[in-house]
Image 1 (cartoon, helix red, strand yellow):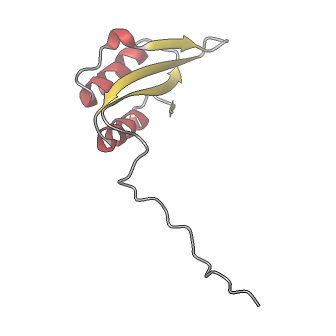
Image 2 (cartoon, rainbow, N blue to C red):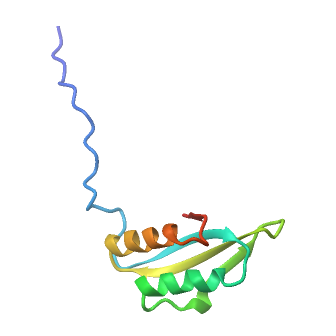
Length: 100
């Protein structure tokens, strides 16, 4: 008869731990309907949380039909808290449909 190891449940990772090492360049993709002011609105929110962000570095791509616009902002992330706050504000913005 062999001795069995006790069954242990997987413990979730500490939410304060992160695979990211700060500071780091962190791309955030923001999607919304193609409309006047969308990219500028995104840039304002990003600048609020990453003061060194240069809006001229935004990468934009329209959907095939032209109805949607994805904007990628690469920020100099300094903490998980900074990224979480930025993500929350972007998701809450009325022009934003999705944030990845």
